[in-house]
Length: 432
Image (cartoon, rainbow, N blue to C red; front, side, top):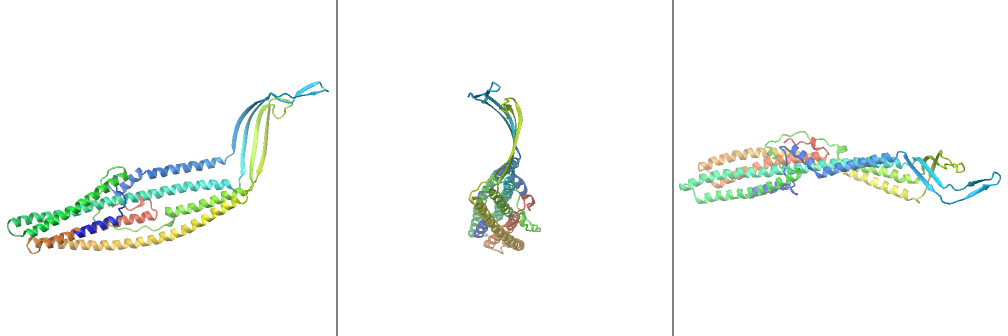
């Protein structure tokens, strides 16, 4: 049974089982993915971050509108100061004891050194970055769920295939037991089959434990228990998706970060320009603008202000730092484009190789099944030994595992390729 152990271990390694697995709530892989996406706390957090970025964008847009305000004030002054006019004999108070003012004001920054457009662009890019992160999280969550789903199928396949081999051995043990009681075979042959049966039982226990772990993991991923469909017995290939570099989230994120650096560059450089603002106020109060008359008065003030200050080159230095980061992002984006194209070509060639292996395994399974049938008939007729029978049974079990496992690996590899080129889960090939 060493061969079965090697096949089982190889399967677990190839499926990338390096974290707790889960159980799906649905009938098909697509339903499992939908449940995981709905249950994912990571995606819920991503949606909240998008909303936060959108509100920040709205706040920035509205901050560029004119500022309109209103207020009122009352001032009591206890000081006394008078002046007498000898010609008229009158006395004029120089201090107004009561001052009341009701006003409305208007302020609009006409020019802020291009920081307005820069800040607005920064907020817009932040929204796009959050949407990009949500898309990446959606693809990763779907892929993780699909790996777990295939793991459950794989573990179940192990149990079913090993159980089938065990049942074949059990039938022969029953037959050999009757022959032994009639003195027509030796106890050594009977013990060989029983040891063979124990090996199957040992492997089945391990496969069932793996199935339990996978089921628990999938349950955590989707939030519910589901009935995973049986692994496909046949495979129907379809055309591979073409590579579109513009749809890959990682490249989109780098491009957006470049745009963000450009917008920040504009904001930093805006500090070297003067600021121009329009101000106006409408007042109604007493004594108003004419303290001599001391009457309620309606009047307005308006003006324009220009301000400029220097920070001794600090703004230019910050702008240069942003420019350098933009250049670094451009280099990273170029490298990622090259790596993505190379990895895509490598994955296509690997898939092609896996298709060829699948055809070879299909032919090997057919020949192994035919040989196992012949060996079983010969064994029943006394023309083959117990060793011949157990070897043929083991070979058939291994051939079944290799063939159906290869189908699962191809399906998973195709979905990994689809995820790597940025396809959203609803466009994946998950019908089987």
